[in-house]
Length: 350
Ligand code: NAD
Image 1 (spheres, rainbow, N blue to C red):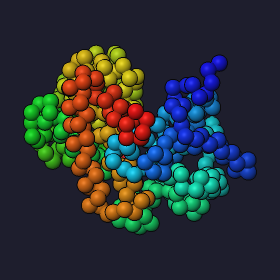
Image 2: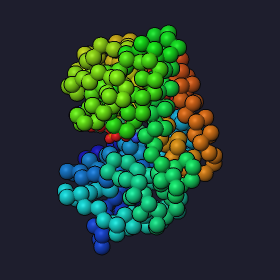
Image 3: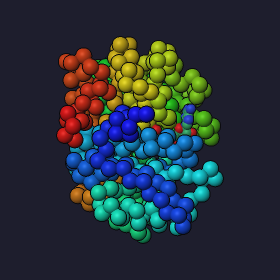
Image 4: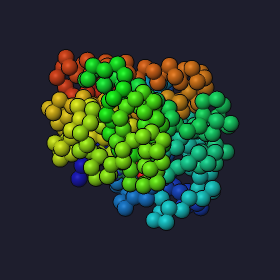
């Protein structure tokens, strides 16, 4: 059997904490990948896993992802992540959240948490009663830069998407540019509105019919069947729903020259970055273009500036992408591989 230390997901994590609290049924894994640049920051996912191993792998992969994302966003933060292993009924109690808050507190500020899938702003408020090492609180509790990360993520994706359009299509604005957006949720809605304001032609798909209809009414977008959004002939595909959508089969069927979207972990495997490159499709690495939300969370937690600093850091996203695309062009390596190498250098693991 391969030792845990030798598995690719482990990737020399600084620490992995297995937390149990018998009284409340809490079982959690807090993975700290790197504190090289600052306290390890990354949200808490509340999820039911069929196998405990899957929870560990998820925590490790997500935690490393946060190290890379925070480093590439120029934040003074390391990377970490928690998964809380929910039972099948997904029972979440105030007592359980309090026990989790105490576990975060015991790490003494080495780890800072926030929302992820299955965790709400209300849950962060509950956790904040036990520890200060939490962000993603509502604006009235967190000061002027708290609140929903969605609009900030969307702004970064919008600016990054425009940089990709300029680079690949030579256009300075989105007037008449056809953008296919997968998803009509929090990030996608804000993104679609920005793009529509600049005259883009939109095609959108979501499995939630009410949501997609509302967004189409607001933006004049054409509604597309969710099964067809990845094969729409357009200028840009913007994945803003699920991860791992870019694989050998879906890449072969793409009819776009640019991919720029918010979803985490868009590439199913590292080889898919090479496949996009081979098809001459310009890819904006996900954790670079979607960092607007963590940028806002970071400013909230570190209290190192106001909305202007958040705007300034989000405005740096297109420049970071250009740097990646330049290096990709000169080295022949695909942008995702270039971004990983840059992030590794920043966290002292070149
Ligand atoms: P959300 O839950 O608000 O929206 C996701 C939408 O995708 C939902 O409306 C859902 O119905 C839809 N969807 C699910 N499966 C689909 C399918 N097969 N086809 C089409 N639509 C489908 O989530 P969000 O906060 O907007 O995040 C979107 C993506 O961006 C996620 O991958 C998330 O991890 C990533 N992301 C979000 C943020 C943020 O600040 N919210 C930050 C970084 C990354």
